[in-house]
Image 1 (cartoon, rainbow, N blue to C red):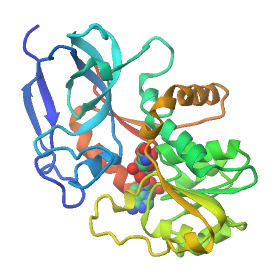
Image 2 (image 1 turned 60 degrees about the vertical axis):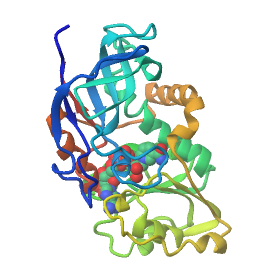
Image 3 (image 1 turned 60 degrees about the horizontal axis):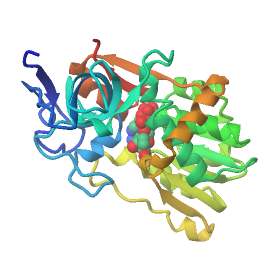
Image 4 (image 1 turned 135 degrees about the vertical axis):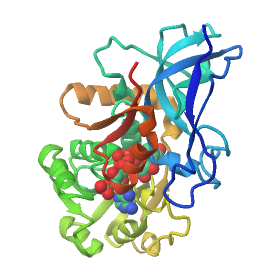
Length: 337
Ligand code: NDP
């Protein structure tokens, strides 16, 4: 095989705020040779997740920060082009931890084979049938523990995770309210996904008043995707023994000096619980989770959106859409074969 050249986006310096092309430039380098037990995959899909912004910062996280000069870490789906392992063979399509790059060299033991002829679009394994759907499922059901008749509030509600959370909460018989950043997103979650109410947080004014109006019986479960002032307002609307499931704090990711929540004392006032989680906590149950999500999908009970952007060179502007809210559902980069 002639030498493969890899275009790779890497961390040149830690972003002070929104990542710039100076923070995350690209280089064209030879593809790393696979050691014993490793394989090279030619990436077809790259998942763009808000968490990646956290990994660019040198702070304690559930996995190590990306080191300076290392490629930007990401989940990928690709085709094996060379294998030094019995676990995967040339031509296999796999999901792996990879990076914002054309080719990834990684341990085959960490690659999950996907059936490209199953009739399920491969990109779905990064969205509704992948980490996104699993985050919604386990975060809501295991951490939020919704009961029929309760009120569930979810922020970033038209996003990849939030839109699935709301639909699962509806299936549990809950009153479901979503907060999102445009009229179009609010219409989508109420008119098409079945949320009971939506709050456009960019136009509603007083968050606390808006939440109280949309949740007349108070909030039993708050699924927090954003942190910041919306979390503070939600805390003021909690019911006795309510649960706050902290999934992510996207409003703070580009602002290291963002103030912390002021209203956590409401946990005392209402004997409420707050719990953070990462989807990796549930890795032993991923099979069960994918089975459940697939069943709902096939029964027409789950809808989802993917925004797929061609090509690798759009990876950084694409990523930034997560922070200005211009993404429509799960954001994925495709590198056509
Ligand atoms: P989304 O598809 O929801 O995209 C991010 C959305 O966040 C944007 O579309 C925007 O929607 C909203 N947003 C951006 N900035 C702000 C802000 N300052 N205030 C309020 N809303 C904002 O992304 P994901 O579904 O992938 O991720 C959602 C959250 O879930 C993130 O916090 C992420 O870190 C977290 N997450 C956590 C996981 C875990 O294991 N704990 C796993 C996966 C994701 P809008 O137009 O409504 O503003």
